[in-house]
Length: 114
Length: 114
Image 1 (tube, rainbow over the protein chains, first blue to last red):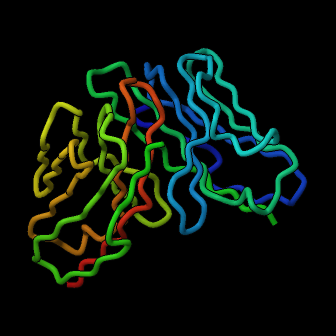
Image 2 (image 1 turned 90 degrees about the vertical axis):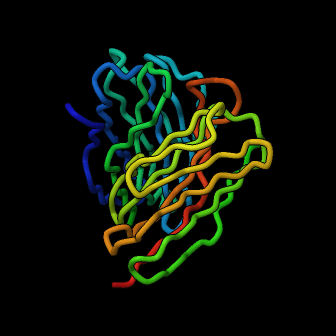
């Protein structure tokens, strides 16, 4: 596709349930990033993939959060046993191998935990 | 630890005015700096990217400057229009890696009054 896509666009879940968020990066982009934006807050880095490996997962807030990337393309962010404080917009970005390494963002997934 | 600050948090100006948004960062060892725009409920749109070796970048009515030694960047918007109303985010890619995570400021919410 022409840009980064994310699904679902909105997700409402009950506390304690597991959720999976999906990111499709721009075709050919080797690096993929997950960020979280809570209401009224700035963007918080979660995890970064280079290919299928994750050199930096320092931003994952707890062991309930995990992410994987397969085939150097699609990535899924999984949140287990969701809590109300997990409610946020989850943004995915990808970067190609270019001189400038500009980050391109998807539209985000708005997660609401009731 | 790199920290990015944006002042003011919110700004309201009448249509047609030129304006400047400010961004400061604590560690001058950066790879690049990127300015984004975020509309309510939307993802991020990249506006300008300045490499660490550059002093400024221009795109249309937008001009971004970078002064690494003082840890500052500005985004200049000429002849502002109501459609420029959005939140503007400054982000720094720290260190010397082209693929590291980027650190965001908390943004300036800009409102252009018709």
